Image 1 (tube, helix red, strand yellow):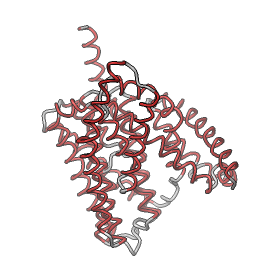
Image 2 (cartoon, one colour; image 1 turned 135 degrees about the vertical axis):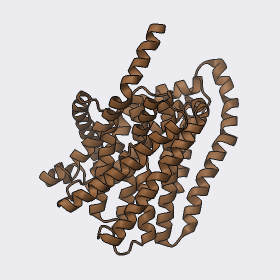
Image 3 (cartoon, one colour; image 1 turned 90 degrees about the horizontal axis):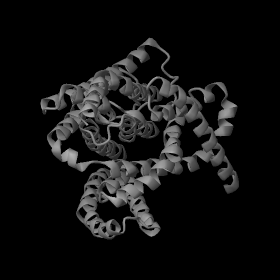
Image 4 (cartoon, helix red, strand yellow; image 1 turned 120 degrees about the vertical axis):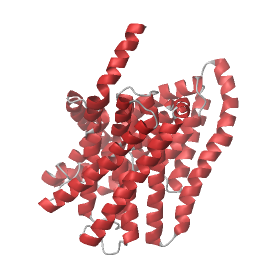
Length: 420
């Protein structure tokens, strides 16, 4: 396929994806689901689970394998740009105010699902054929543990924005704990891949490089940006050159964390979080967010959905496996994080909201299990069961949140309105 043909295919794919997202989004809004869920479902419907199953020729024409090499980097750009905006909106002050709760939720939200996931990995290794022969017990337990303790950080951010929780205790504690959980899960994945490749130096690079990047961003880049921001605050505007400078920082941060195996989203998020609050952040959000949310980000969610197949669970036993994974995922993440928040003094309904939000797995889960499938750590059947868990835990987040925590949040909002 020539460069011109690839360009034509990309534009057609963008049109198809956006139309599908808008159609599914119309139905999603009617049942209280955010647009992000529409984008996730649209990707699955456009992929081998529906279009590829019933109209394989049409699917091959719409999304040929060669064109996916172009769609992938564009989708990564959208995801990284969005996570940069999430970092710009991240309220570090609230995390400091609720630091005890954020740390407790983060630790419990990692340890509990990891232990349960490792136990499931042990069981599958000993009593099933869901793992390839080359996968060792250590790799099975570590991979299943990492898969269970992941939180879909980008999807969590979009749900928090959809629910207008940005800056609240629930939203900020969940984002902070989710960011730490995801970083830890990627480090665990790095250890699994190092075990397969017999190269633990790569895992050390991922973990050490991530810590070094955060130290560099907070200790050197942020102080330099603070000096730079003084002139911008006095002028009251961000020039085109200064905007480009911020985009360069975003790109370099995302490139570094992607290169060390920690994923570009963390580099973008951290870089957004260290930008000084004020004129800079407001101008960046106004310029970056609209196009990112409307055009680029749906490409990421749809791209991941295009690689997901839900049709391999074809027996009662395999549906039982999927059910076990789902129960373990909900108990290890949602219930454990709710209890951790309550233990640190968070109000009951806010703690329920945090537990529900932390249970979102979404497409970060799909990314990890796709890597596991490609590297031969899990079988396609186990991949499908884990993918189903990711979809269900994300779908249930919005309605469960409204049922458990939404009524109290609305009541408080009405009370505050009467006070004003």
